[in-house]
Image 1 (cartoon, one colour):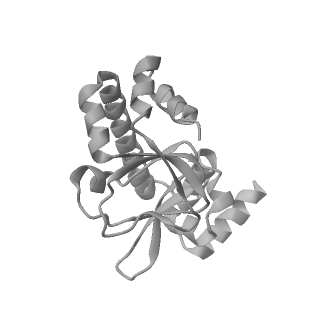
Image 2 (spheres, helix red, strand yellow):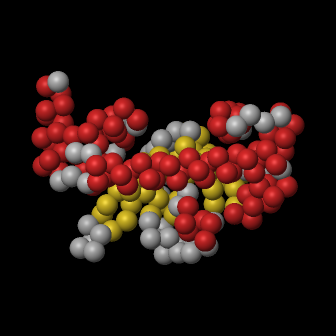
Length: 193
């Protein structure tokens, strides 16, 4: 698989000199994850940072009653990792699973850290990506508090339509923090608009 998609993703987020970019992407290894296989299982340490070149993945955990709760969806051209487990080297409380067959590029924590400390452009990229992930996390947390289920549904359609092609409705409902019945009602009302 050609690493051009990885290069394009990095450049889109922060311009790099070509030679430096070539040096960076050499550290990434191509991996494939089959549908329903796990990139990360709860209780394991997330030791890889993964660029999803193609496919669709989701993160989930379990609530205190044992119900599966989807916490994130990852579409093509996304970075996939569980940030606290990756950086703090602690066991994850989430699972990350391939919803479809997936392909992409992974880099280990140690290799990523080496790049962050030796290539100033990549360090700037790392800071930007970490800040972006924090902003997205904060935005999602506030949406769960400040927005109705209907508004969260509309935002999901606007930002990640692929979810509706790949994820099960119960997974979407748990991600939106609504019941399956509420999601059915929201979808019916939305199609009437």
